[in-house]
Length: 126
Image (cartoon, rainbow, N blue to C red; front, top):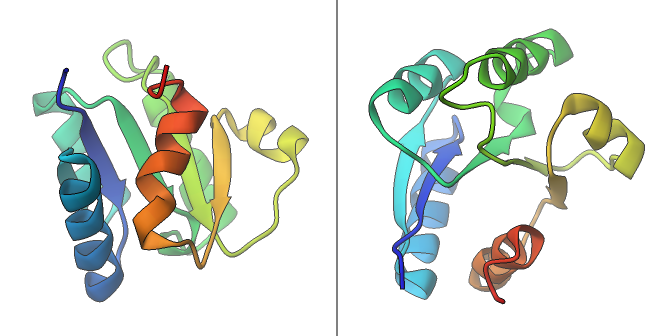
């Protein structure tokens, strides 16, 4: 079975570290982390990832989020990488479809089941 590589964009150290540890421990995934959109874009230029988990609260404004999503979607290297938002904001399917993300997972999420939620959304359980 292929080891999945995840890029987690989260600016809060404790949340980023615990989420990374859980994804690595529960599923054995390799988790790359970034604390900003600039760092995330730089990592996608040198590292192939299977999915990008983006903490919506990391971005100061909707414009910041739109900027990184636009950069990812318009780059041939990253345009096909699914993006999943981690958010305290309730979003409708229409809203995350408009943003170009696969889905949104509500925070606080259960760290033990986060990997299975991501796998289910991406069809990795099949």
